Every structure is written in structure tokens, then in C-alpha cells.
Image (cartoon, rainbow over all chains, first blue to last red; front, side):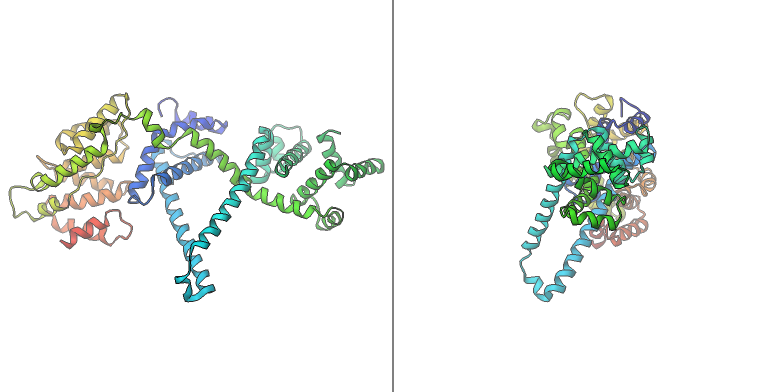
Length: 195
Length: 284
């Protein structure tokens, strides 16, 4: 980080300036390559990149939640998040595989070993595709909303804030104004999705 | 009627705060205007999910507007996927801010004529190492069993220093260290690595490379290497590598017992990155 200080980065992120995360580029190669080396190259370059991006998102979310990691060791901090994510990914894959095998054995018994496993993969692929389609639809609708609408819905739907809190945070006159604004935004979102 | 005004009317309708005339007007609009009817159904579903509409009232409305049930389901799904959709959007934005290394290396990293490609150096170093290994690390005295074990099992740890084309003095320093290290010129690398560590004392990888260089010819300093690897053993990223090289440093220092004990410990550790190497060492 040669152009801004870490404190400036934190202040910028709190104001929603995500472009500042570009300064983490200096740690990208270190984190990705360390992950690949530590995993004995089981983690591919593409996976390492995806995990690094997730780690940066986690870092930003932690900052927004009020956590203040020791930024003198930011590279080690990001690298640790990457490693934990990689381990979590492996554990989740193992759990999924065990669960699938248990279900299939229960359903088909010993015959399972000889059965064609492709249909399960196809099913999974279809599920993922269907979900991606829905996510894409929601994203398109979100992008058509104003910044204020997105913020109010984020605060209400995800963060579970009350109307009083939202009114205070977004400097609205009172909770009633926040409530009608939220319903108007929500209406627009749903209409975009329907259309 | 504006959107805002219509929504205010709907809220008042739910709380029975409309006058009979206003109520009749709103009912007429809902009945006759498809757009208003759609707004009303969206609104009812929203209020139901926000727990502003009781189960009993919901069922009453459902009788008049059967499409309400599907609307509730869809809104439920949108709410559950909202954060994920938001994250995905942010992820796309982030991928533009931080593109993959392969996309940026062309513009920022060193040019890659054949003689400057990393793999050419790696290959040359590997061949050189294979040819010279017995001579590089073996002492003149054959009875030094620990040194034999070291020579048979030492392999250079892959050096990855991120050098940038046209970068500052540190980048030039890193490039020089990398060239010397990969050519096995460990003694020359030592003062340069010390300089780099003075600049970035928190970087564990530089210390690991320094420890490895201390084990190289012409004047191996295993005690210095041992001190470095011991300090790095608990490092999150390089702890396992430090542990393996510590075992080798003990062998180089003729402390066969300690070297073997450490190699056995690595060999028993299922997830250790150097388990294969340790098992091989112990089997010979």
C-alpha cells in the first residue's frame, strides 16, 4: 500500500468507496501462491483467485461490521482467511460427498457402485443453473433501483433494521416516511422481477 | 395518484383508517385498474411477510386475490436470495478491481524472453542441482552420516518473489536474489536477503529463504539456519516448510537424533505438506 494509508482505506470503505480495495493487489500474488503451495497445489490457480476475492469480500464485510483487523499484518490476515476458506471448502465437499453416498446407498444398496453417476451431476448442474438464473433476475432488478432504494431494502431485508433505525440512518423525517419509501422501493423491485 | 400517495392509501386501508368514500374509491381502482391491482397484491404479500398482516386477514384477502399465494412465495425467495445476489454483484465489481494475476502480469511483470522465463531458470537450477548435489553439500569426510542424509534429501524451496518491471530498488534487489538463489549461489544471496528482511521484517518467506541459504556451500552455517527455522515453526504460511528444513538443518549439523525425531513427526502428520519427503528420508 504505497499511495494511501490503511486508516484511509478503512475510512474510504466505510464511505462505500470499494475501489480502494484495488490497493490489495500488492497482496494478491502472495495470498494465492501461498494457498497453492500450502495445499500442495491441490488448489488450482482459478480456485485460489476465487478464494482470494472471497477473502477480500470478507475483509470488507468485517470492516463494515466494525471489526478492525491489525492492518500492519494485512497480508497475513488475508492469507489466513484464504486458508480457512480453503479448508471450509474441503470440509463442505467431504460432507456433501458422504451425505450423497449415504442417501444413494440407502436408496439403491450395493447396486449404487455400478450405477451411472452422471445423472446426479446433471441434476446438480441443473439446480445450479436454475439458481443462477434467479440470482441474475434479482440482480438485474436491483441494478434498476436507485442507490437509496437498494440501501433501504438491504437494511430492512438483510440487516433486519427497524423503520426507526432506517429513518435515523438514512436521515429521513420519521419512521412513517421510511416505511412508505421502503414499500415503494419494494414495489418497484417486484415489478422489475415480474416484468 | 402518485406511487407514494397510493401506498399511503394502502397502509391506511390495512389499518382501517380510510373514510368510507376513500375506501370505495380504492376498491374501485383495485377492481378496474390492473396496474393498481398488481400493486395491491404486491403490497399485501409484503405486509404479510413483514408480519403486519395477520394470518386471518391474509386468508380473507386470499379469497379475493388467489394470486397472492404465489406472490408471497416469490417474495420469500427474493428475500432469501437478496444477500447472495448483492454479494454476486459486488464480486463482479471486485473482479474488475482485482483481475486475475494472469491478466495483469503481461503489463506489470518482467518481459518474458526465453532466457528470462522462470521455468528456464527452474529447469536449469534443477539440472544443476541434480548434477552437483553430491558435491555441493557433501563434506570431504564420508563418515559424517548426518551430512549424507542432508545431501540426499535437500531440495531447494521454490522461490517466489514478486518482481515488477521498472519497479523500485526493492524489485531490482528481489530479482537479483532470485537469480542467485535459483543458480545455487547461496552465499551471495545471504547479505541481499538480510537487506530485504531489514526492509520488510514481518515477511516470513524471506527468513525461510535466508535459512535455506545458510545451509548452502561454501560455508554452511547450520546453527544460524536452525535458529531461523525454529522461529518460523509456528508461522501460518511457512511453518510446515520451516519444520522440514529444520529437520534437514539438524542433519547438516550432525544432530541426527533431533533431525530424525522431527522427520518422524512430519511423517506422522497426515496433512503436512512435506510428509512425502519425510517418509522418503526415513525409508532410506
